[in-house]
Length: 173
Image (cartoon, rainbow, N blue to C red; front, side, top):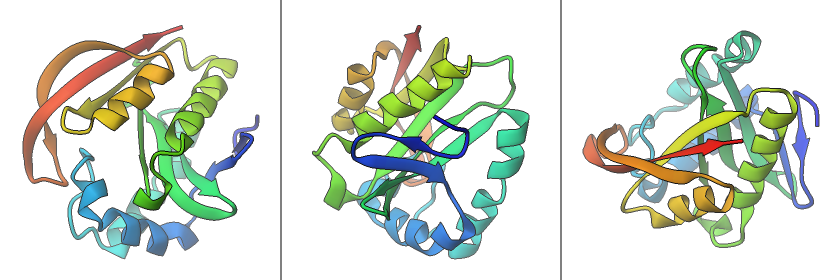
């Protein structure tokens, strides 16, 4: 596994490029996606998506952000990443997938691959993640890759414009 690409039997995780901005913007416009995300507002513009993409290289260099396009048969089907605000903190895993790719194990496969890469590079000893409680499928993905519930809170969801019940999860290698 390299810094730039992570391969699985069915997926390629690769860095997101500015050329992906249209597809990402189109996908996150779906309320089934943005309502389950903490940081993506409804109606996100292509300019907002591009601004977010432009932060990735700096985050990768600072070792605070490693974000990948989840590609299936060459097409962008979602996003997965490991993010932290400081290198002294554990990475937080986050992801979303296009609805037409749901229910086929792609998120679990992508998450497992990202975790293997984090562990192989010495970055994956402790990880955190979470999901809104009305998104139990995301909780199942996290459980399958070794996360355990560690608390509940209310977290603001930009996609909803309000706080919602949230399950916090952690994984210790």
